[in-house]
Length: 467
Image (cartoon, rainbow, N blue to C red; front, side, top):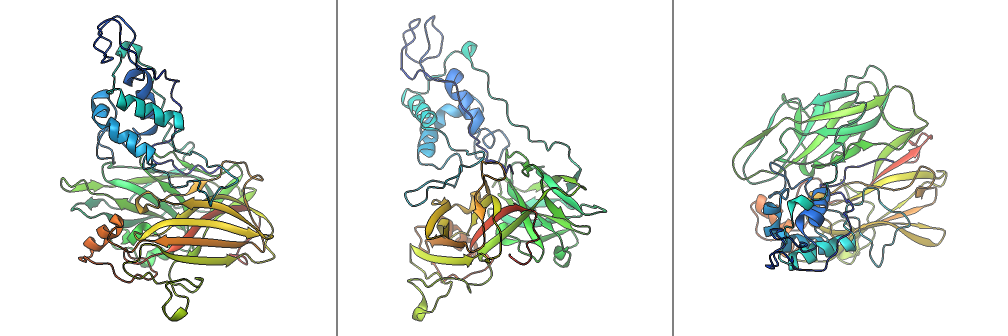
């Protein structure tokens, strides 16, 4: 399976907890501090909460990490207990966008699903309501081993061609270009970002630039501006998404992404300033490849409105009734729908990863397929957050994954909130010196929008005639 990094907060099971709030019989003060001889309150930090927090939150929430506060110790976590419980119950944390809804119940599950179980959410709520008992350090449960962040059997590590300074208050989006130097055609089977300054690297998208189209864009420092981090140059394809704490991206068995001789590798960085002065980053990317052609080739592609709205369906806000990708100001629930029909001759191919893509005005996106008179929802991100975009991998072996086949009608529905009630829009407006919503069309800038499905398929077929 392709393992796209789980956002800082991959799920890990914690030991079963007795949530009965029983006072310690030794000191009778009920604080669960273990300074008496009796049994500490449950749940408490050392026996119950620490394993959960370290497994699901500390990937981002550590000293020097991208998160605004650390949760590594009892002293750090206890003051945040109520907020932690609220954020988890509201689905804000851990960051995970693929959610089942009344209108979207996929037949598949997701690899590395970061969401906490109901038992885990209740554990945090019980701990907060009990006054955050610490328990006795001598009773501490072993903390979960963090997943390995190193890419096994790495072929090469390529450092960014130049350092980048992150300062001010606005986020930065910059693409770094490196030459992998492969002297023969190869197939990439693993990718991992090796972060330098974890305080400012928010996420990184990695692309193979098979035609070296980026050569025409890079400056003397080997970089170019890429608003939003979305790269759509001719011959480019995204192969991974990285976030702090993310494990390496690895393809399914016997699948590889082609990287011809002369290709370049692009890393699209999203930098988030600390607000405390300038920070410098010069991260790197680790790649693993094979010169032996695998049985299946991995292809990454995109459907939808990216540079123009030519494929949009008619919508309720279309001016003069003519279909156009245009989001009017002060409308909180504007919808654009995209239809794409797969060419009839394409035999079934495995769909192993997918993702949604919009910008700051987007709030909800749904992807489904219409086949033989039936609808099957593949993915919905009903609380879209541009800052936590990612790919979602199917948790199934090759041959048992969802299929894309000739005649399929793939539908994308994107909902936008172009009002001042949308905090992401307010931030984007402020960065452009604006205070009121404007009409938004399709494009790459922060005050333009997209409605796109990112997808990965594995096949032994040449796909140039189909996509």
